[in-house]
Amino acid sequence: MTTGKELETATLGGGCFWCTEAVYLELKGVIEVKPGYSGGHVKNPSYREVCNETTGHAEVVNITFDPSVVGFAEILEVFFLTHDPTSLNRQGNDVGTQYRSAIFYHNEKQKETALQIIANLEKEKAYDKPIVTEVTAFKAFYPAEDYHVNYFARNKNQPYCQFAVAPKVEKFRKVFKDKLKEKK
Image 1 (tube, rainbow, N blue to C red):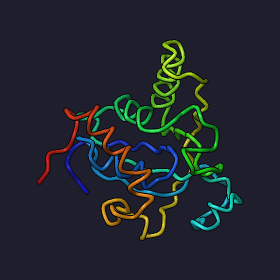
Image 2 (image 1 turned 90 degrees about the vertical axis):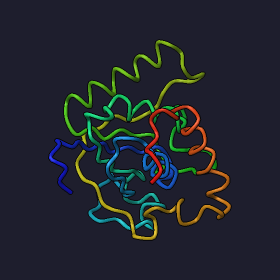
Image 3 (image 1 turned 180 degrees about the vertical axis):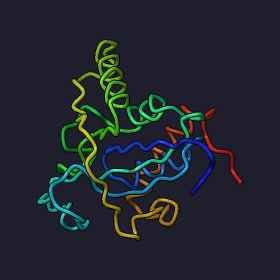
């Protein structure tokens, strides 16, 4: 996709990638969101392998965004609001290393921004517990199987989507109403 603009990529693990994808698909300036896996030691892992915690991967989203519309710091502001960065290897009922809170930075500027935001949140005591978000250099992204793409949009009435995904999307819409993409 060529827009004539310099696009950037963010790779984030905020628990289940269905939740994270659904939120970022609605953020103004985001061009594309792909669910997948990052941070592990096996090439092209399957969902089953990742869920069995044998590959070291986290469920992540790869976000392509236009930094002239939304900056990396704003991407992280949404990230920290829409998941619990204080829960080690867990988000709600989802438990395992694949659900860890993680930022896989693509350059030194992203690393510095992530570390500064975490330091600020800790200083402000934004959470009752310490932030455990892993900040690691990006190495590889492996797209998830096709049935994971746009999962929430295609399965809104599924119980997990109602219980886990919908509340995160609603919270995002409420807090960031001025940053929502316009409906077509």
